[in-house]
Amino acid sequence: MIWNKEKACSVTGHRIMSGDIEEKTVYDELYKLAESGINAFLVGMAIGFDTLCFHVLEKIRKVKDIKIIACVPCVSQAEKFSFKDKKEYGRMLSVADEVIYVSREYTPYCMIKRNMYMVDNSSVLVAYKRRESGGSANTVNYAVKSGVKVIEL
Image 1 (tube, helix red, strand yellow):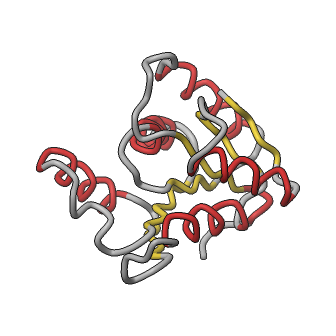
Image 2: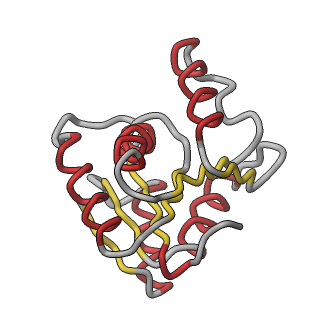
């Protein structure tokens, strides 16, 4: 582990985004966190909001000393991704500062386990949540119960 929980931020959000958030909004919030001393960002590596955050963090990493931690729920995470998404996923894993495989094999709970791992190892959660059920909502609820600061975009 190359980061301090108190200086770490996790991100969570939907795989299918409704087009109601701009990259600039995400950039501004993550940059503000980097300015405040957050220097490690844990990303769940899903399509959608996670990918957007990873791309934004790559831009921020060019001007701030931050680490991008890829938190992968299982080795086969990208198995059903499109060819294009698999290629980008592989590229992102190759440029992450650290890759954590929370589970080796797929299980019905590996995504939940990954989300809990990220919350448990950070002090801030940035969330793109538009529904009150599902993985992102559960992650936000877990963060609140765990005393982790939640920033909803």
